[in-house]
Amino acid sequence: MGKLQIHDLSQSFTRDDGSELTVLDHLNIEVQDKEFVCILGSSGCGKTTLLRLIAGLDTARSGTILLDGEEMKGPSSKVGFVFQEYSLFPWRSVIDNVVFGLEMKGIGKDERYRIAERYLELVNLTQFRANYPAELSGGMRQRVAVARALALDPVLLLMDEPFGALDAQTRNMLQIELLEIWEKTKKTIIFITHSVDEAVFLSDRIIVLTPRPGCLCHIVPINLPRPRDRTSTEFAQVRRHVLDLINQKCSIQ
Image 1: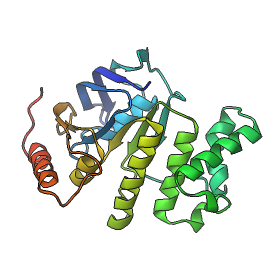
Image 2: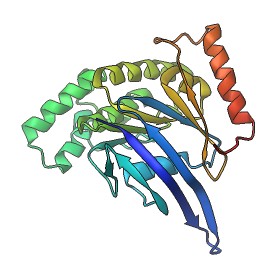
Image 3: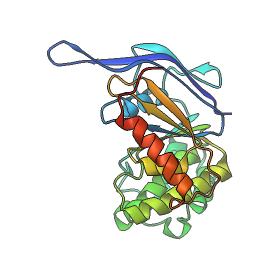
């Protein structure tokens, strides 16, 4: 299972001058089990803040986050997180990076390496198991980060602009690979991006947030069949529709 329910979620931070900065304001979102959802919104609207709250890395000012009906009150092994930065340990080999979370959970050495090998195969990095992050391309490092997150077998995978720093060709390739991984693992995925093209290519639904403070603006179902053709008229029409929603001033629904 991997159904996420967010009810009346608000978050604010205290500035140096003592004033309050509201980042998320009474946000309500529901993500279904095994769904691939992308979140779009202008810079500063609270997208990363939202993921950190879901992951239990921060505490919300108000509201609730439920995963399969259980309130999330801190970090959980049910939730995996792939950050925008590669966040790999440079002194650890590829496979030792993948086993890190399993090691922290106290899983025995033989078992954790068996699990890691399975996920390295899933992301096509088995032959690089003994290499170090500095010896890998940016795309390969991010695939290691995905394998590390999946090795803990989360029901929900959070991805914060994981391909944002990559060149266009590598980014497109990893999008295809991510969809293949999603279809094999059946994880629920929430994916943040600034790219409308990426969101339309990947997601079942796109959630558009208002400018800060982030509130729900629109939910756009993407009914195009997979694999999706970025050059098709239908793809271009959906992309244009989503761009129009982002560029206009959203009304809170």
